[in-house]
Length: 605
Image (tube, rainbow, N blue to C red; front, top):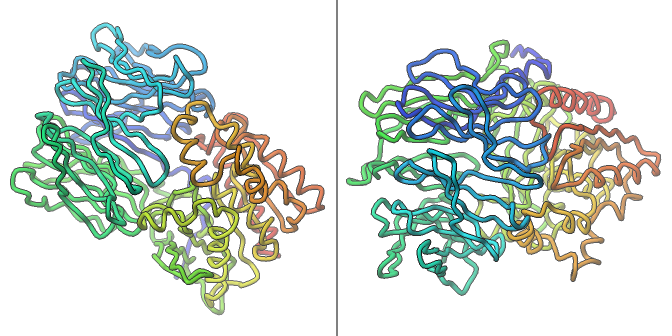
């Protein structure tokens, strides 16, 4: 097979698009795209046509949130250079932007529209940086009212249609959470699902009559399923289970349709039911990928969704329930790229050191064979608790197109494979999850088209930590490492997380990784910075200067330490990025430099 090789510029000229909101007349759809080089808000007609850019930011990313229910204004969010202190803005019909949540060192998030469309709910940490209060803001004049003042660390989930109750999550750790209901009038908060053993409850939402609470739970089960709580009697009824975890369940406006999303072994499976009959809707089939992110219009006549596959980046579609017609509205793939030159991943599994079965996704370059071997990379996702999933990723396809096999390992502690697998990494970081990555390397080395001596490791965020841990704690296993904004010192990271993480996310991390107060020696033992003298393989580090989660000093220190070993180290700092790359120009620089590094120290080693 003749395969054309493409530049990183060609791969990144494929647009990233996401989100959808119908205009009040349901004639256009609002979405977010990086067509301009950074993310901005766009609309596209439901009938088809060229998308139109609504916002024209060229410095900071803008993320479209929603059309106003009864006019053409839109809500969007924007931070400053990736610092995650995002504000909530309105774009008026005359093009003027208005900051609805002004102030310094605060974060604001849209939550939900009221049922009568006259107001919306949002949260902000302006009063106390580690806690989020809930406000309701009037659409007509943007006057706001405090609805709930948080003093403990609750996470908003939904508001009842009669605006009388709010459902909150109280997350205790990564495998245990409770659901509370708050009465707005009496200010009473009550735990409606008390439980003794660890049980993760999530996604509570009220029915249209405000008589039931639908939610997801893994109580007495490895996988999450849908259950219903009767608000008057307290009776609980399981409603739907699947072979894998259900990660989303929602209703259309009048509950004519029910949407269920399932994590089907690293793929998204969608089911849509007629609520009255329970009959399943026959959805269109797309051989190029999976249907994701369905959203039904207020009239329940139309539905938007995306189709995404390994070889097909997300494209936006609209579906007409009456005619059963589907129309593609926005295509993302750069027309210069032939999708047949891209690679479909294979779901594989291998046995780890203790015989635990570990799932992974394998991308094999075209024409790789026993006679035409290729180097390989173990890709480690973020987290702890993330998952490498099927779907398009331009950077990964770029590497495979340039003849690197990639194994996306879902090491123990990854989500999507049951709560026992998720909990299997608790306070074991730098050891068992790392050993899974080493066994992933061994699996790659056993394939007859891989050079066994040319296997590197690459990852971002928690995956970047795993890269550093691999080079420090298993220094002879991998040929090179590429760390994208990874943790080098857990003590410092856990003590310097953003303030708004401290009421919920920090608690989850401490349970999973360790407590910097009581586990200092253990955290030092698993932090690569304190063992950097053992690193002897080439290392590349990439870091956003504005990263509030993994501070720049984490990368500064590990780079300085490894340089003292007389080891090849390359370091790239991006001064207008935070935790990850959001600007196309930076992605182009970063990913092109990574390929150059791999060609020199892995492919040609």
